[in-house]
Length: 421
Image 1 (spheres, helix red, strand yellow):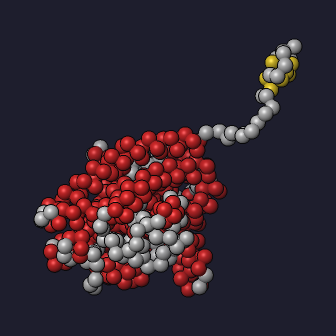
Image 2 (cartoon, rainbow, N blue to C red):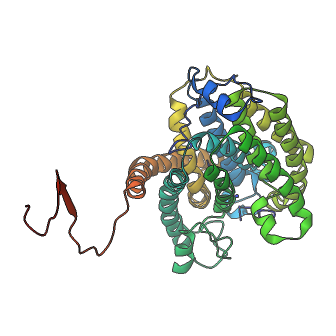
Image 3 (cartoon, rainbow, N blue to C red):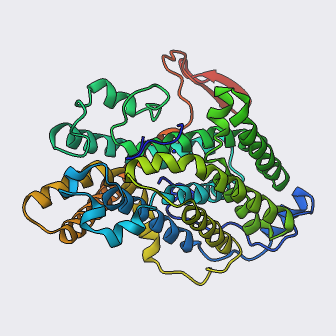
């Protein structure tokens, strides 16, 4: 559950770090050719520049979600000591739609996961996902749980988190287990996990152009059927509300890798048609948080803009954007997403109770959350990710082995337990 209740269910998120997006092979190969030929041709071309534009888009998505929770939601007037709609109406008019940043995250995720896992084995795929998601998440759970249980936040009306609640959150499976999330924004992680599980099927078979295209088509139809089939398990993994974004992102990566064609553009366009329809279903849940009417026309327009911008990135329109600071900003988006809501609420409320104005309170809290996110990234996420990767990449160990290893010499075979003869 976000600050508003998700309709039925998940910034948020690159080789080992989705915030740092490395380009794949050059685009330009005709996608209609055979898989092997297409991959060989693409691989022989010069590498395109680093996709720092995607890092920038991740930053925009994260900040839009932050703005939504802090200034778009009217349901928690105790945070700002008044509703955003009354205190900052001009800003609220825009940030009430900031939740669409989550959809942009899913769109980018489809692109980046397909790119970063191309050519990976299932084990490498699993390792990359665990290393990417777990370290910052576990740290965020500890920090946020301390704040939720000991500081007045927007959730002060609910009972404290129990030790069992916190421990269950470490699994990322708290939502299907029916356990309260330490921070409501963690609902998006369950959406991401389901995407990873579904996509793992294609990774296991080996990623090729044709297989990814087939996967996009099958998943799109399954997501439509799931809504009417009355099969909860199918709906759980087909994700009718969010599948269009992941599917479009994967198709855009194929455009980036192999070149544009009408089939891939058709998948992107078809996905947007499904996405705009899904917005009709999610609209009500976000209206619950903002406590007033939201325009579907605005929502559909922002969604179309997000699709168009990511498609433009895939087609090379932003290759010239190579500002190095975007890589750092992209690396911070995940910690910012994990830490901003409950901790941010507590900081804003504290500042307002000290008599600080709305704008200084918001600006100071943003600076504090960015600093905390950098500290978590630099001193927790990076070293823990490296350690976790080494552990997962380590060769298997046989526990309890008592037999000494065999040492082979030229022409003889001896056991290390006896002398060489």
